[in-house]
Image: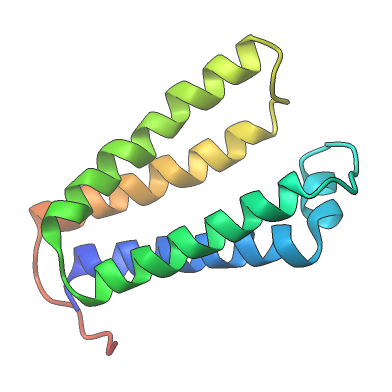
Length: 124
């Protein structure tokens, strides 16, 4: 598995865990961001989609699809712009910037790995 694939695979595990958290214990996840608890189904549906995206991303990593690696860098960096805009508009709480930070760090790792394509010793 290439370094870029490994970075995307790790990011997929984060998405899978976050998605499962939102499906199974949504109020625990919401509470960690200072958000009020809810019994509404939207948060579980968001978790389902996050989980599915993580599963797709893990398969992209396993299949070594560099075009998607590059696209993921652009999309994960764009998360910062959206989250900052949401916070400035009063639509999101500042702790959401932590999610953006995780995405930017992951995108940076993938971008670095694309420029340094040595194959990793990690077994898939």
